[in-house]
Image (cartoon, rainbow, N blue to C red; front, side, top):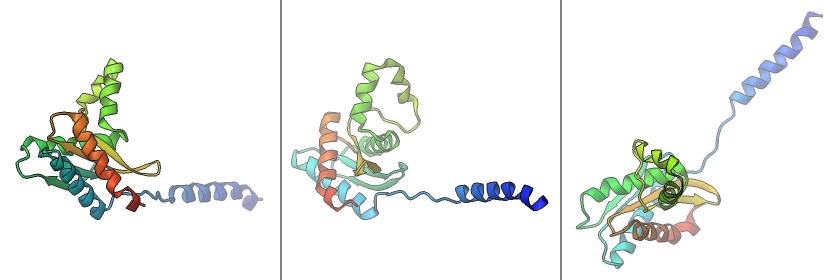
Length: 162
């Protein structure tokens, strides 16, 4: 009788232990891919005569690679890193966040989030629908141009991201 009444408790304990022991499997940008994307972004912008900095962060927003072109302004280092962080954190291009803030003034408080920079130039790096990191570019005359360099850099390596 005691054994029968204890069985539901033992089963519940086993299920809760099994559920808490599950592991997450997440994809993340590799160092090799991060360096290549950063290099590509700097080279693509240089072809248009822009001296930029490109930063690549992993899915959690931690810096993986940073490339600063000769003659890129010192402010571009922090700008690129913060754009990448913002994009990785929100899982969106930073230009979309700019648009959302313009359409919905209540979301303007995003500008107060530590580390965020709400300017165009940050683009998530995806494998399928999963964001594995982000690249941020800073140093062209506009966020749209920064973002174009970032998107083209991802496109150059996309087929090798798995």
